[in-house]
Length: 162
Image: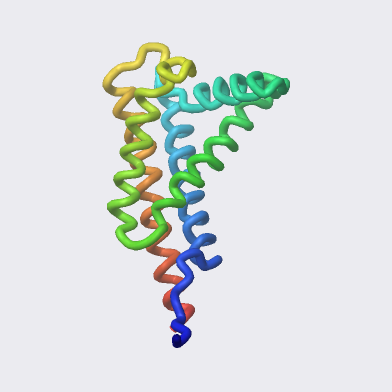
């Protein structure tokens, strides 16, 4: 039997490119949220959902949550890490734009509808169609930015390999 060279689907360069594009998408989502939050009277508060999740998770593990003054930073960092890992799926294989739109849409619907079901409270004091749509748009934007980053990273890497 002859040895056949096969492509390793988990090349380090591919994994690092996917993670990098995911982090770019997550940072875009967080920046978009922070920009809107600072300018809107009753914005979606994804940061508050993250703070509640950290408190609940750490309490469930028997650990003491961070002080209120540090919780916001933990929530932002946690959002970037978790969303970055989620959006890193955008850069796996072809079809980055479609995958970014689908993953962003799934995350957006989940972020708008699931927090109360999970015991994390509401995304806004008075959730409305506008706050739900805005929450959805945050995550869709993150997915599309991750797709753009994935495409740019792939093009740059191909140019260097040539």
